[in-house]
Image (cartoon, rainbow, N blue to C red; front, side, top):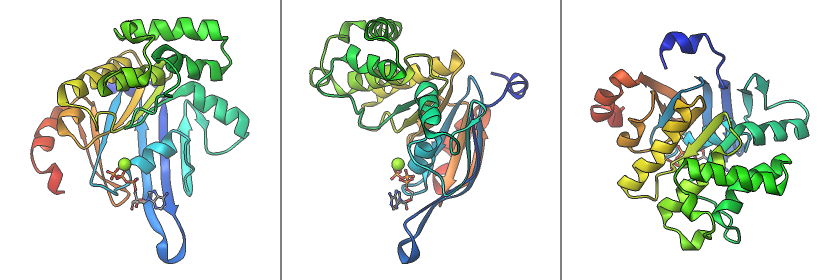
Length: 249
Ligand SMILES: Nc1ncnc2c1ncn2[C@@H]1O[C@H](COP(=O)(O)OP(=O)(O)OP(=O)(O)O)[C@@H](O)[C@H]1O
Ligand SMILES: [Mg+2]
């Protein structure tokens, strides 16, 4: 998406002066120190940085799974850090898909049931949720896995199911924390292709990754160090930065 058409749109995700302090007193850790980040429809942003730089903290707060110490998280024009908790949790569930490194599929449910679950939590009837889940699986060419249980699938297959679960019901914001961490590179690419396709279809995505080759799928790369954004790059210069000095910054 061109920069001009992005500017005409509202960001799906806005992080404003986000801070997060874990613990207190002598053990206090400043995991985030004033993060500002906007992610627009159609955009996939990669977040990179050393271990402990705050990437997962940023993502869990952006997804409403943790609260900031200060600052605001705005998803589709609603501040998800303040207001009626019930309304906000419904909004978070409806708008945000979250993909974890370790898939987090529910072992007792089949692939289709795992994908249907968020929709059932949305209040959609079980039958309709299943129809939607099967459609999402077909769209991602995963229909043949619908009736398999997690322990009957490879890691890559499980992660693709986890992505289908994060995307079902047209979630506008997809957050993925090292979704390729446990996968070989070819399978990792196929997972990234799914995320990329969803962003191309209009969702906003944030991808935490250590791998430059996966970050290369993003429109923009944000580098964190010690809880602050130290560098940002757009795709046109991402390749040279990623293959150059970025790791030493
Ligand atoms: N629940 C917690 N309690 C105390 N400190 C925490 C907690 N969660 C994270 N931290 C600290 O906050 C900082 C940022 O952690 P975070 O998990 O966000 O890093 P990360 O960039 O995701 O690292 P990695 O690449 O290893 O996953 C680290 O110093 C970490 O030790
Ligand atoms: Mg992490």
